[in-house]
Length: 265
Ligand code: SF4
Image (cartoon, rainbow, N blue to C red; front, side, top):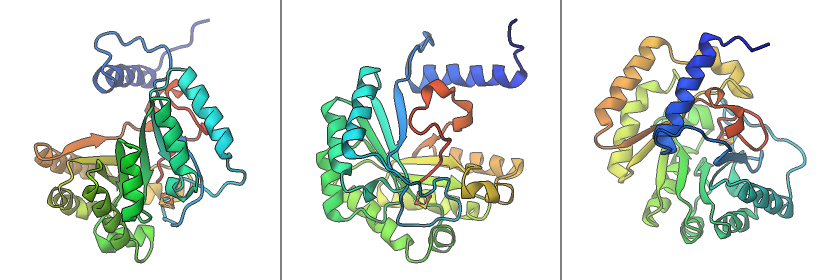
């Protein structure tokens, strides 16, 4: 018996086809037969303890050799783009070997980081490894950001951004939308322009991990979302605004890795 298609199913199909056509540049041929990119939580460990974190400190991380085997499989399956997330990916002491192995296989790489560990030296290494995007989380100006990410994190993150920009790395300001920070959105976009950044990623708060308990309190209502769209439009000629497609809307065939829905870091 055929499954009954719900309204939600057909909405997902429309979004999926739009994603394939406009984001993955597959033109009118939307017949994507296998995954082309992977989001990989390379570690669950982190040096911060953010109030909205969707990740958790799991036991039993993969060894470097196991990671290499995963990369071989990703390569064999035609994956050409991998986003490394966490936890904080830069906490792995073999992260540069992993990035290097991905590059050796011809796979494009991005990382999601809280930016606090990006010293000048780390930024240089990321440049040598030609990491495409360094997505650095900044949720608000100092007060809002530190309410979420902890004391003395703001300056370290801003320093991490500066170190990336000094190396001509593509540092992408990554903002998680939350009710308590939304008042800073415009100032964050100004900050990005002032620092010479040209891309901003907008991420939804994920109702996963600690984010689950915060979700009702912090998720934006319709009017707040409309206001966000208005602000983003105002800046769209000066910044490339990248709204992250909410993961629940992606078919599971496009999501590889732990299989968990994740919004960190
Ligand atoms: S949200 Fe990111 S930076 Fe914050 S604790 Fe989680 S993994 Fe670490």
